[in-house]
Image 1: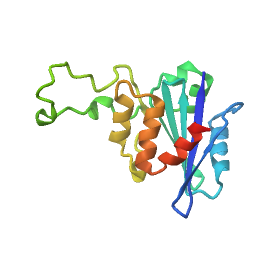
Image 2: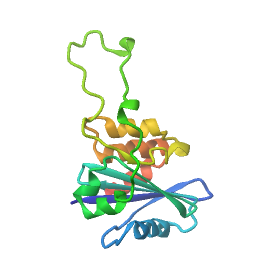
Image 3: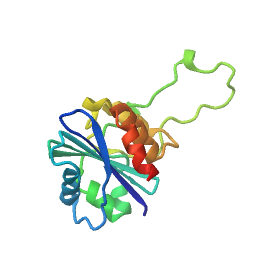
Image 4: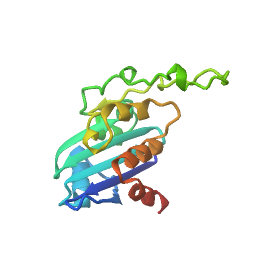
Length: 179
């Protein structure tokens, strides 16, 4: 499995910085949280985006190095890999239902000349879990995060880019991908 783990951290200066985080050899979720803390021990907000195999995304958040919150784009990741089991194995509560956030196109927004069938909004097998509201105070409300995860064809890297854009740290995350 190929994984990409990028941390975005913000201190008292309110500026974001980023760092790639090596998750290899991590024993459990606590050790992954420690690695996120180590990116900047004085960070007020630390967010870790973990993408796996162009299929799964997990977002972890620490405030002042405490109170770990986790969101996963699909509960199936826990069954697919050791990393998925570490990140999502303890989450028992599903996120809000994707159907609750499905976006319907208003009739006046539809292209009147378009004879094609509309594409489905939600991926039929997506099963997000965890705290979908973990980034709401950073500009990404739960319904928006769930919309990204439910949009057919959006890869984890696309979701990370959209979320990072809303948070204001897109350039920092993109720099890590270019390395």
